[in-house]
Structures are given as C-alpha cells and as structure tokens.
Amino acid sequence: MGASDSLFVGLMSGTSVDAVDCALARCDGDDFELIATHEHAIPFGIREQVAALSHPGVDEINRLGALDRQLGQLFAEATLALLATAQTKPGRVLAIGSHGQTIRHHPPSLAGAARGFTLQIGDPGTIAEYTGITTIADFRGRDIAAGGEGAPLAPAFHAAVLAKTGINRAVVNIGGIANVTFLRGTELVAGFDTGPGNTLLDHWIAQHRGKRCDLAGQWSSTGHIHEPLLTRLLSHPYFTRSGPRSTGKEAFNLPWLKAQLDILEPISTRDVQATLVELTSTSIADAIRRFSLDVQEVYICGGGVHNSHLMHRLASHLAPLAVTSTAAIGMDPNWVEAATFAWLASRTLHGLTGNSPVVTGASGPRILGGIYRA
Image (cartoon, rainbow, N blue to C red; front, side, top):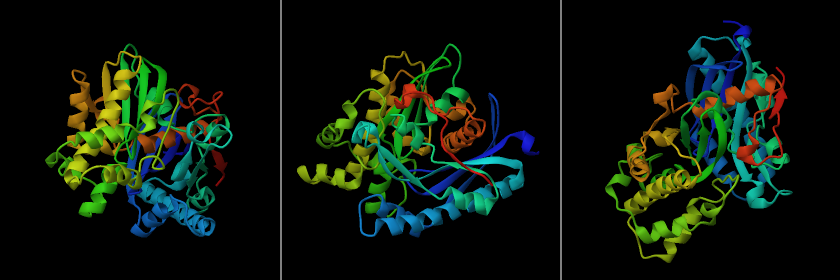
C-alpha cells in the first residue's frame, strides 16, 4: 500500500476517558473501508487530570496547557501503536483526524449564539511532530462559529456509510452521551444528542463498586427501577428541547444526580444503577418515537451495545421495532466514532465540507478542522 491508497487514521477519546479508540481506514471518494483498529489505554493519572479540568478549579490554564501536550503525546503513541498493528508505515498515511479530549462543551443552545464554545485538547502539533503525519483537529469549532452546536458530527458519516435506499433508519451511538441519526433512505434528515448514554452508569459503578463499567449490565439487572427518581431525572429541561441540540457532562453528572437523590428517601445503589439504565433507554426511545419519521430499523453502536441489560430495555421500549448492532450492516459498533474522524480528516484534506447544518443548526456547510502539516 502507498499514499495513493488514501489511508487515514481516526482518533476518538470520549466522555468516559477510558481509552483512545484508533481506526485506520481507506477513504477514497464515496468508498470507505475500515482496515485496522486499536484501543490505547489512557493512564489513570491522565484520566484524573481530565476529570479535574472538566470543572472550574485552581490554576486551570497551566494545568490545561500541560495536559494538552501530554494528551498530544498519548495520541501520537496510540497512532504509532495502531500502525504497528496494521504493519503500515506512517509515510503511507495521508492524515490523522483527532477528535481530542473534550474539556468543556457549552453549545449555542445552552450558552447563546455569541457565547457558545467547545474545547477539545490533545495538541495536534505534538501529534504531527511525533508521528510525522499531517494532523487535523478542532473539528467542532468552525461549526460553532457558524452558529451550530458543534455536535454531533457522526450523523454525516452515518449517512455516507450506513444509509440504504428505500429504508428509514435510526442509528444510535451510545457513548458517554447518546446521540441518534435519522436517515430517510440515503437522506440525512436530523441528528441530535438524546441525553446521557454510559456516563452516569460508569461514574456510579466506579464510585460504589470500584469498577470502570457495569459489564453487560450485570449489576443494574439485579436492581429495580425507582420510579420517583426516574421521574425527577427525566424532568431535566434538556429532554423537552427541540431542534438542533447537544449536551455533555456539564449537564449530566454525578453532582446533578446527587441533587436529585438528596430530595428522595434513601435508595439502594443497585436500584439507582437500574434507574440510570432506564433513563438512558427511555430518553433514546422517546427521541425515536417522537420524531416525525416512520423508522423501520434501529441500529446501535458505541460502548452501550455491550450492555445487554441496556439493550434489552431499549428493545422493550421500541418494540416491535428490531434493535440491533451496526455489525448487522457491516460496521463494527466499537469503531464507528473513530472511523468518523478518519472520514472527516479525508473530507478536510480534500477541501470538502464535514458538518451537516440540518443536524447542528449551522448557517451552512463548512470545511471543518485545522490542518497541521507533517
């Protein structure tokens, strides 16, 4: 393989901050092929620094600057590990598309058009320097400058790769935050964040069981849904918003959950976990049922696809619609987001737009990201 093979790397580090997902893909016009993948662990110390910077604190600028460089080095290491796995030399890759690690997300729907912003770190200059590969980053900023939410960006990729003529599909990514894409045949008609995905589930089990995630939903499946708590959680104003919208851990976090719990009588920790599964599944299902599209097929990607209890609850809410993994239509659910940023890097490098105004609310299509030449 050579540079003419149109090889791109996509890097994604999400809300859970557990690993860097890396995808090597061939992006050639309308053709997309996922070639190799790699999961690169994020050291505990870096995860702690990201968590600390996600909220206002002391000496933020100095801490952010140092972490920006650290993450840049980590993303470079992750890229080189991916290429070693794929037995591909860096010189054969046209560009890296790095999402970066989100530190703040205050979109226009939350902060107002003039004050909306989003911040992802992981210095792209450092990535380019350590890998010798042109690096593209800051994909969300231009969309926000054009009045958009800056998120979600994956729906455009879903439309390019997962749409099918004559079939109305909903593609749901359940990462830290969940989002849904609506496809009328090959037409992308809408996409937005539905609310929390895994973020509250992961933080709750980490706090009370010392585990990074509730594997297959084993813990939540032993609990019972606490209806008064569920009602309080679903009363969050985000769930009543319409039009282009996005959210993050700024809205859905443990302090917010604790505030709801403090109003109620004590609830067992496993019942809270079961109720958080219901919050995620209900908010996703409500978003699909309420949307004005006769959805025929629902496909799930992201880490949530491995939570069998969550998948069962989602399927029960959406019955008789079948709910299945994107693996059924040829895309490994673990790598859709990383693949998205390989695809977006290809779009940017070739001077093509990457956002979808119908999704983000931007004033028009825009070429996304800044290019850091090797």
